[in-house]
Length: 357
Image 1: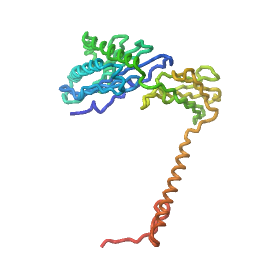
Image 2 (image 1 turned 180 degrees about the horizontal axis):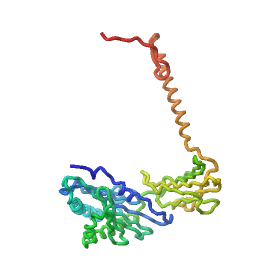
Image 3 (image 1 turned 60 degrees about the vertical axis):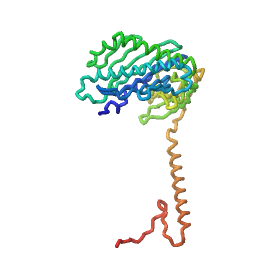
Image 4 (image 1 turned 135 degrees about the vertical axis):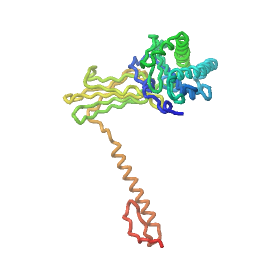
């Protein structure tokens, strides 16, 4: 069978999961739950079904078609949800196997090759702020391209590919509408509230800040303000000059990005025009763990950006010296008259040529 769908992990889908959200009030209690479902199959059979649940970008649990069991990644989450709730969730996921099999058969029914593998992906996310539901969305992705999406607040499916608009009425049927609402209310929002009401997924951590200044080759001055290793993800970085807000130059941002340890990263830069002296600037940081906004002045002199180059050169020189010393000692230990060679340190003596008989 072909595995075209299996090999692509859909940049568009990951952007939907890891996309940057608008900055919020740093004192708000904001949390987000994401359910990701990935099914691989043909018009004849469902080959794989995997589900992963994330809360605030921390993986909580997973499910796959082979084991048909929910694997909880954080032990206390099982206590927060309860055995009955997890059992009901497992039954729902088992039912989803039939739903995904039907979706694949529907969208692949016109394939000339019935054995071709396809990948259907469903992303569902919900957000709460101070225990109030503020957003929820569902995205349906087929072989790496988004086909449908819905904003639960609007309640209307949007078709992104004209060729599949003919199936939209199925998604809006009473059966699928009730199933969608049940999932989003009970298994997205309610699950999020249960877990948050029990404990935090991890300890809050303030950002580690780095403020740099360097001069562009064209003469403009560039500042960078970097926040590393903070949790939760809500944060605000802004530039001020002499204690005042304003538009001083060209601002860019990486957006809030997740780290492997479930903390977050954000960098903002400010490029000033050549006529600006670059004095009096500060980066102001707001985060729940800082309690009050923290002010970091920009250095008055250009920051050395590559101190590691000199250190690396010294380290390499030391390694070379030690290797040569070791070779010299080994050579001295040989019996007198042997023609040892200090490879890499001393020139190799000439040696006779041996001819095979």
